[in-house]
Image (cartoon, rainbow, N blue to C red):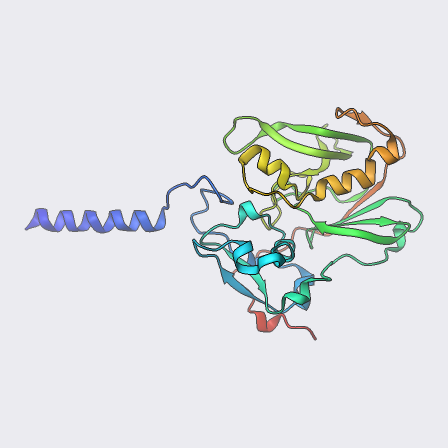
Length: 289
């Protein structure tokens, strides 16, 4: 009888371990060690208060494409997340009306401090968003991933001084530690007192601050090359910014290596890391006024 009870208790424990400690998955996944599962409805961006949305739980059969069809790009940008990081068990912000996202851009259409400059890059850390300005007028904008807690991106006004189309990190490797972390289309805007360089570059976007201080932009082509996900790359914001800010039309032929630049674009980083709420904000509190 005691043996039967012992085996019953062990079987219950094994079930509990299976439920609360899921196996590592290769893809898609934001973090295989994220046992609690990510809840992006808890990441508070000021501009999302003007959009009616609700939390949506991602099921095993779900993807951004299956849920939103051709509008998946709008939802990805709204959540500041790439397709590789949308995985079963997590929660995203889902718009009540998809049309509300068609003109969604949390950056100001005109920015006074940029009026004197042909190229001006404004990064709002609280919004996790980047805007590209020409003489004060917004040309385009898109999500960005800045430094996580403990590795915050430096704030202030800087000037781009180098470009490196095929840059890789000298400090960090990919998740499987097979190669140095790729930083395609890298634009250097600051070197700290500790001689650590800060770049704007291609990287993963998991829906919240995630870097070690650099500013990351969508680049699914890079992800495809490194992780083979997604199958059909679409988003490549890093290349668009690179071509606009430091491309060959501005600075001549690009060797692909590190090249120092004179009179590069201004980069201004403002704000602070967005708060991570203890629970999700219900969509009824996020309707337009």
